[in-house]
Length: 355
Image: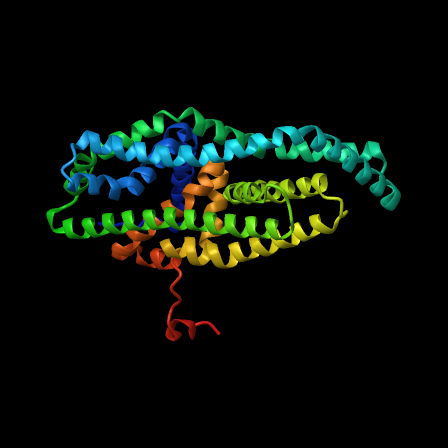
C-alpha cells in the first residue's frame, strides 16, 4: 500500500537535507574550492590538449605543454603588473602625506558642517572597520588560499587531463546504455557552457580595462593603463573591489594634479558610467548570456556563493548553476527548474494566466 509522505513532514526533511548538504560543502571548502577551480581550468585548457593530441604529441608531454602555456600567460600578466606597480614605490611617501592631509580636511569639514566631534568620527570609523573585518579577512583568506594552492592546482589539472578517459568512462557506466546519448549531450553542453563563461569573463575584464584606461588617459591621470588594468581585475571582487578600483586613480590624481576636486569627480563619474555599462550590458550580454542564466538568478546565486565560500564562491556560483540548468533541462521532472534558471521568457499563453 502506497503512502505519500505528508507535506508538513516532507518540507522539514528537505530543508534539513539542504542544510546538511551546504554545511558539508562549507566544511570541505579547502578541498572543494581548489578542485573545482582545477576542473574549470582543465575544461578551459582541454581544446589545447586535444589539439596537441591530434598532432601526435605524447599524452604526458601534451599535458605538460598545455599547463606550461597557461602558466606562461598568467606569469606574463603578473610580470607586467608587478613591474608597473614597482613604479608606485617612489610615490608612497607622497601618498601617505596626502592621505593624512585629506583625512584631517574631512574631519574638519564634518565637525564644522554637522557638529560631529573628532572622537565621534574616529569611533564611527573603528566601528565600520570592525564590521568589515570579517569580509576583508575572508577575501584575504581566499587570496592566500589561491597562493597556497599554486602547486596543488596545476597538479589537479594534470591529473584531471590525464585521467579524463577514466572519468568519462565512469560517468557513462553509472547510467543505462540507452541513456548514453543523453549523457554525452549533457557533458558536451556542460563543457561548452563553462568554456564560454570563462571566455566571456575574460572578455568582460579586457573591455573594462580598456574603458578604464581610456577614461583615465583622457583625464590626464598618471599610470592610466596600469590603474585601468588593476581596476578591471578588482572588478572581479564584488563590492570591495569596485571601491578600491575607484579610490586608486582618485588618490593618484590628488597627488599628481593640482586642479582640486575636478579630476577626482570626473574619475568617479567616468567609473560610475563604466560600472553601469558593465553591470547592464557586458555582464548580461557577454558573461551571463554565455550560460543562459537570467539576471535575477545570477545575483541570488552569486550572493549565496559568497556566503558559502567567500569570493571564490561568487566566481564559481554561475558556472555551477549553469551545469545544474543543463542537467535540469534534460530530465523531465526537473525541466520547470531549468526554465526558471534560464532567461527565455514564456509565451503569451502562460503570461495571460496572471493579469
